[in-house]
Image (cartoon, rainbow, N blue to C red; front, top):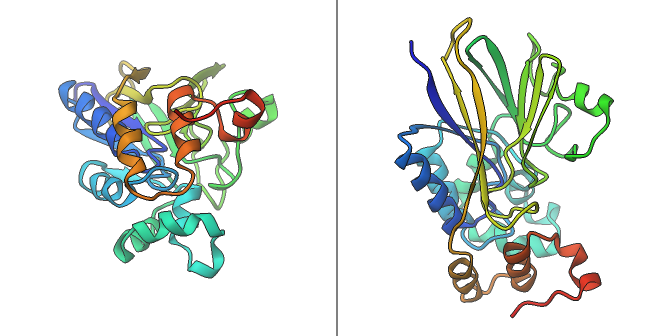
Length: 253
């Protein structure tokens, strides 16, 4: 078999404008396999449309923390999350709730494991700046990830901060965020290249950054009645997390 490219996307967060741009870019590259690391909805206004597009275009989707929050009964959600949950259909919520914890595949002799946040759970966060112990913990097999063998390549999302780190024979990468990047104001995804189910062969990993029409996404959001639209707009324009907006004097125009 020859090498093929696989797109790894994460943290779409209801940003349909960015998601379409990324999927169009993958299609232009001839990439037909797309894997999704979760947080399909929430924060952005069009979660249901993003769920539909994910079900159509992604081969596998793993469960993110927002996917859990939004699929819970109303009495188990925090108040401001209700808008995003109610924007979804009942079928959307059931699909999100049933997503798997993680996904393994083999590319060119490398066992690749994908999950949303960490090998512990979709709620256990590991930042781009982490300890050696945290790095090692991403490569363990347990009840959450399923049995070994342990992976040599691990990809995740959650922190919206794309990076690649290689230590010895192990590679950790974060796919960043398609729809709510917090490292730079553009959509991010990862291209994996390798020979599927092969014992060896060429292997490559590339972080792709893609500009999209941020202002169109913001303009569309304001007509939906979505809560926290100003914070969302500032995040899309600046890639600065909303908890820092007031301190930095950032306001939506």
